[in-house]
Image (tube, rainbow, N blue to C red; front, top):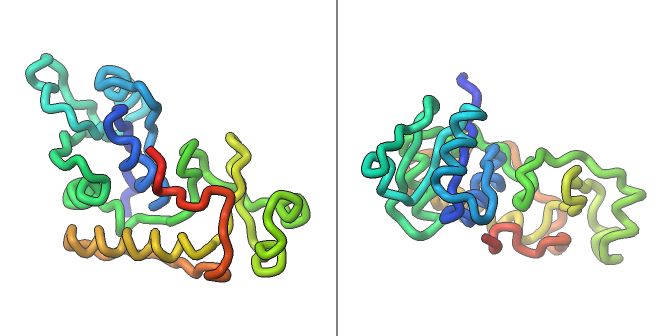
Length: 185
């Protein structure tokens, strides 16, 4: 199987970037990156360009070698469906393996270090923690993880795809440092 696609998104697609990261995809996005910046990054790093801009041809620009898409929808869930119709984002998903804020791969966190940063209930109910090596945020499988997976499954179904994953949430009554990692952007 081919490796999963890597994406470069312009500033209009911050929420989509978070959802792609929640799926485990490398989705490069920075606030304020216009089409030119996202296109340059896509070319330099061999990424698929995602934009809402309709002006690529009008501006005399060419898609990067890895390709690209101009998305029509304004809603992140619908944008996931659009992307999934061209790229295997659900079939190659590895949910909760990237920081939804930084795009960095998460690393297993030392439990002893993690328990000093989480509420007592989480200490009692969770055994596994992951941390972002870039921003330092701490994550664990919690109630919102289940709702995120259900949202992703729904988008996959609408795209005519299947969300393939090996996911087992932790205690469904727990929380995380970011209460809903998909809500920003």
